[in-house]
Every structure is written in C-alpha cells, then in structure tokens.
Image (cartoon, rainbow, N blue to C red; front, side, top):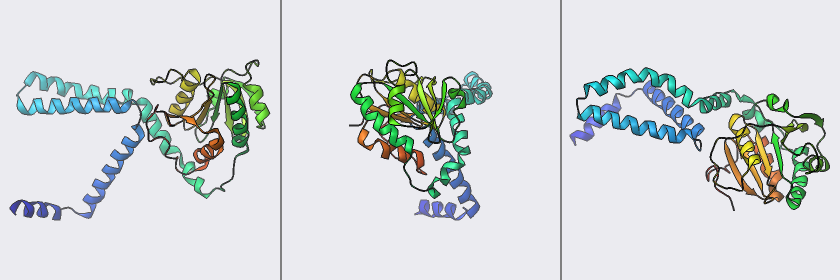
Amino acid sequence: MELIDSVLERFSLITFVDFVDILLVTIIIFGVLMLIRGTRAVQVLRGLLVLAVIIFFLAQIFELRAFSWLVDNMLPVLLIAIPVIFQPELRRALEQLGLVGRYLRIFRRDESSPVVIAFKEAALRLSQRRHGALVVFEQEIGLQEYIDTGVILNAVPSPELFLTIFNKNTELHDGAIIVRENRLVAAACVLPLSTSSLSDRQMGLRHRAALGISEVSDAVAVVVSEETGQVSIAHNGRILRRQDIARLDTILHAFLTGPRQPDFFGRGQNEPRG
C-alpha cells in the first residue's frame, strides 16, 4: 500500500510541461528507430547497447579504476565516431525531414501516370522475353548526378521505347533509365551499388543497383530480372520481389503519389513475397 501511495505521489508531481517533454523524447526515439529499421544500423546500434549494458554492470559491481578511466576517455572519441558510423542513416534522416512536398501529395488528383502505364505494358513483354531492365522513378530528391552518367533522351514514354532501349542488341540496354515528371530523361545511367548482403543468388547487379539508389534517395526503382523474368521494386533501402506485373501500375502509383508509402516492406529487406 505504501508503494502504491509513493508511486501516486510521484505521478502527482508530473506537470503538463514534463508530459510534453517525455512525449517529445519518445517521438524522437521512435522516429530514429523507424528510420533505421531494416538497415545495417540496427545491428550496430544493438551492439552498442549490449556494450553499454556490460560496461554499466562492470562499473556498478566492481571498482575498476583503470577501466573507468579508459571508458571516460573513450566517450569523446565515440561522439565523433557515431556520426561517421551512422552517416548513411543520418543523411537519410535529414533528407526525410526536407521532403515537405511528399506530405502535400494528398491534395493532388489521383490520376494514373502515363509513364507507369507504358512501363507496365513493356514490363510484361520484357518478362516474357527474359530481357533485363532497370527503371528509376525520381521523386523529391534529385538524381541529376546519375542522369549525367547516361545518355540524355528527354523522351515521351511508350512501351515500344522501353522495349527498344532494353533490347540486348542495343547500346543502351546496360544501365538504368531515369524517369522525371513523366519523361524518360536518360538511359544507360550508372547507379551506386548497395553494400548490403543479398541472400538470393538470383539477384544480380541490377538488383544491387536498384537497392543502392533507394538507399541514397527516395527514388523508386523497378527491376525486371533477366534470368527469371520476375519484377522487383526497391524503395527506402528495401527490396520487394516477385511482384505481379498485372498490378504493377497500381503498386507504382501507390509509391509515387501516396502521402504514405504502402506497407509492402514489413517482411524484411530481402524476404521473397509469394
């Protein structure tokens, strides 16, 4: 009974400002966890937490003066090392904060994109012919540095154009097409390769490039596998495999126009979807 009275007394001391303070800290921690979810930073953060718990208990149980001195002197170094270790995640978090425009998409008309429709028709035939393809849809974060590595097209989209570019006998079939505002801006573009481990051996350089561009930007990348003809979608550092081509326009439209990204990535980064 005394314990309950003590707890109630402590709760009575909490003011509205304290409640707001706790809520803000909770939101920040939750936001950080959501940003690093599914990335390699999760394992690094888990290792740091385990190390911190071990150090805390050693310091509490034993009086280790030399060890405590070492920990105290390592803290300034860790404050510098953490931004270096989590550089991709920190960059991604700052980019997310700057993407104000995505929250205004709810006010846009819900209309289909002509480039999405054209690519859906082309993807069906590319899959049947086992022709590999990689198409990147630019969003809020500009991809000009990657556009400059390719051949400028600035062309109106059509299924025939997609099929011609990704034909094995053309000079432009290697690399990616980058789409900007319903125009095929460039072809044969070189993208950064992801350093994440891909467990499936059927996922080659196109999949790694699609995952790589999704790790450094908010772009949506679509891959047609040359070996299996299957379609995969990469976004936000995750990849979703074995998509139904018949629903490709619907899925892409959800990614490109919705105020929130669809919950397609709850299964983990490289887990296949049946």
